[in-house]
Image (cartoon, rainbow, N blue to C red; front, side, top):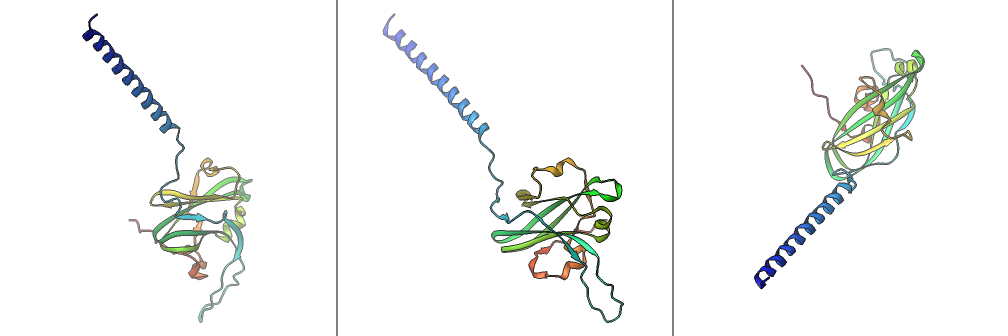
Length: 207
């Protein structure tokens, strides 16, 4: 075989080796990309919940008036509260979604999961509070929640979550019941400790 033929064979062998090596390297890279753990959502460092939601009983506040007979204000509400920090100088909106699991005492302990979302606006950097309530009649009928969770979204992405149960995402196992768990603006507590809480975005009216 002449030199020209040997050169062609050598060139073809080299080209084949380069092609195979390139294919192997691409497969390795693709495998590495697939096996990389998903990182935190963008903006995940914006909000930090300091501890799991805290529960307490709280009495109806009494407001003095000059014309109407005042009630005693002795009923017990359930109050769930979360303390959180924000790192941005200003945040336009943060959405908090709460889940509260109860076992209905009026219906043989039937499981019920209440859900409520509240959006806060114009939140400055620093320490803040968020909370939700159950009306005294709900507490009297069904009892206080046994488990509570909160999920925080920033620009549509989950950036923080806390949970009083050891099992993660337990709330996915129950159909949510809306309209019973109340945000602060829906209760007599809307004017109590007013400066501790960010402003709540009003729900848009529907036709």
